[in-house]
Length: 211
Image: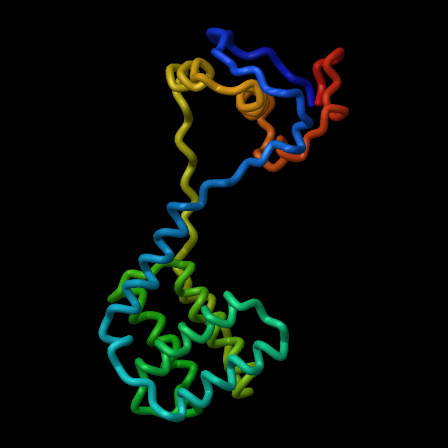
């Protein structure tokens, strides 16, 4: 990759730090917005009329069976908790029926209901569908097709582009030397954050201005 010279900006105020390899730079991606939205959807489901319903005796037995099967298969604690929570809401929604009497069509109707009434997003719908697919294939062993067609379409939104003024403000900020190097690489070379985090000093050929 050839580094091209970009626009010239005021020399930033940097704080001297000991020389270290770029591999030691820890950069975390900001997924707070999507994560908080997912949590809000879960909270809405917990406080709605579905969660207020009782879980019948048959459903409680199958929820416990689900946990046992997933533990035997070494599934993660988070996955077990998520699948159990999603299926409990489904079984509460149809609490007048035994679990084996709930049909694939009724599961799809439930997903349509939470999409239209509770305005849940793609992540929630996928979580419900995946939990149902696992339960009916691995636990109760009944035919069930993952209703992928019911997922909301994933939206592809172009990111906002920083203006020249915003770029100038970024480079003029009181960054440390390490932070200035990272920002300069991201802006000047077009590298991804993960690529910058994995860089080593020997990856940089300063003589030929290549990475």
